[in-house]
Amino acid sequence: MTRQALSVIKQKKKKKKRTSESKEPIKGELLPKEVSYDRLLAELPKKQQRFVQQYLLDPNGKQAAIRAKYSERSAEVQASQLLRNPKVF
Image 1 (tube, rainbow, N blue to C red):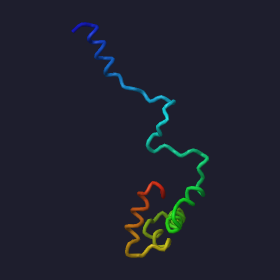
Image 2 (image 1 turned 90 degrees about the horizontal axis):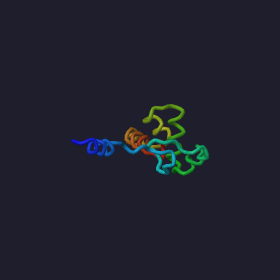
Image 3 (image 1 turned 90 degrees about the vertical axis):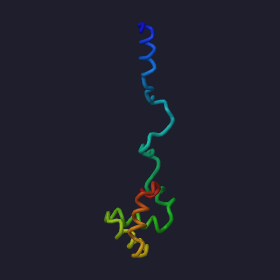
């Protein structure tokens, strides 16, 4: 191969770097400081608000769900679903 062909191949292999000017949020990026805990909590239904408050006191999901007035039979499932919900956590 010629040198010119090799340089073309090297240019194609270069990866695009993410610039700081990019407007797309990075997955897992933190919210701006202006977004307060109280405002985010107020957007949730009352039962979910109680779950968040109880979970912050004791990080046992099932017990937090029971104290938040979910039924004991479904508390473990509800806790699992709530903890996977990005609006809750």
